[in-house]
Length: 161
Image (cartoon, rainbow, N blue to C red; front, side, top):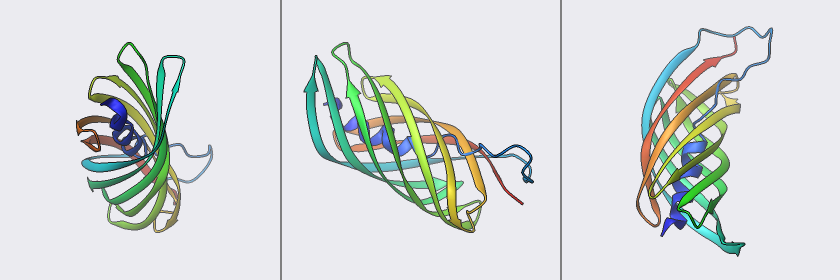
């Protein structure tokens, strides 16, 4: 089933656009980082509306690479009768980014067909050593089973000074 593609999309969306900083803020140089992720999804509801299937769930994603830690997110995915789907989610990442520890909120959106999705993500609102982090990026995901997701990501990021 495509129901669990939501999990992957949710996980990936947390890594996307992490860059947006206010104009005039003192910021460090923009850097780029990459990595991979694996995750699972717990479906909390399934609704059928007008030929669409809407799946809500909680996703737990483990990230390695530039982002090293775990993200827990809530999100929704809409599956259409033509085989296309789109998803959105938001959640808290706890871990390290470029060696700095803390938490950040990662929000993302994605779309695709079959068992593959592509998306964008944004990360900000950090705590600890991640308090000044702004990032944005892209991700690609695959759903090897109904409740599993895996993929890769790339982000551009900077820390406020």
